[in-house]
Image (cartoon, rainbow, N blue to C red; front, top):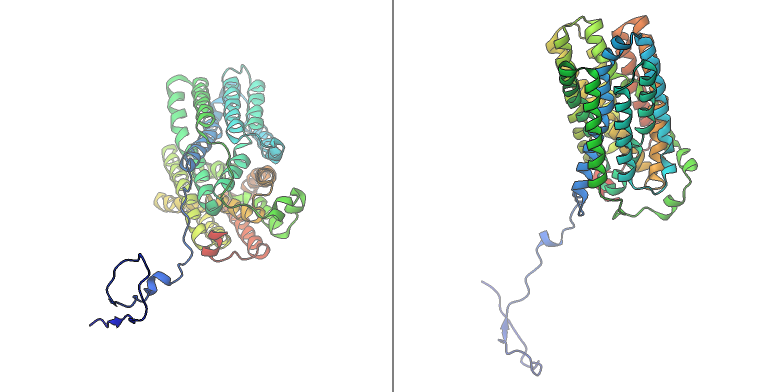
Length: 443
């Protein structure tokens, strides 16, 4: 039964006040559920108008940018046969182009406040022109110059795109950077089949024409669809804005991340895995061509899912912790793949593990790097990151090739795995532990 409390009769009602009963219930005690402090909530990925479009267009733009390298990889054997050159000469040209394109990423800071959509649309248009130039090249000399031109104009995607996404989504960096990486992997997976079909129907030159058309369409998509940069709702600390880039890059945790990026390049990306996995399956294990194609497709399909899963786990459990665990697990998968033997079922399972884990490393490392540098000169900082990671790291392609010549493919995969283990040790020792996931997301 509810206890009734009598209002004292000596207290008159105010003039003009409502006529109420002299009997009233006491105020109910507040519910504990209403007063208990709520724990840190995971912020929504899309918080503002245009966020969804920004992420979708940047992811699609990265896929189109990967059309260029992956599509050319299918054309190279026909170029070698048509121009009667050696793979050694082709390899020298590609190494020089990769080194130039990688080091040029350090110039991202020189772009100043140029809009990302303008820079990236111009990049795609430049790649389209270089591809058309290669299609009409009468000899390998002009084709090589066209490939070098493509390397010169294709560098902005990684530093400019990563800086754009890190600034726009500061609380979900690992997630959006993983989508960015997955977009590139999706482009790598999808374009070889298209280029192969055009080659079969009309020849390699028309395949390059079709590739140039897709790059031109990518330029239109990015130029018209990517929203302009906008300020993040989470403002950086004033002292972070004032730190010069050189001083920022000299900090011990940042140096550790840059060192890990260079070391881990031995087991990551288009320069190593996508070059030597098919070579191992065909030259090392002498598998049929169709089997090689299926197994390599499994690896690349897994490379799309890997970054998405890694980014989600990193934003939930901590980016540094997830990165170190990914390095170690990817190293184990690489060694197992290198020594797996001829069983296609085992190779398929291990290839999926390699694609899932090895390609998750890059966006996780970028997220840790972005956490350490904040918004201070983000474009210039990412330019330095990619110049070191992909420029200097491109030398690993030659090192792994030498290991294959001297010790075989299993030894090469062991070296790739060792690069990941060493990178994990550098991150574990050189980068301080990250805060708890809830606190991390609220920063």
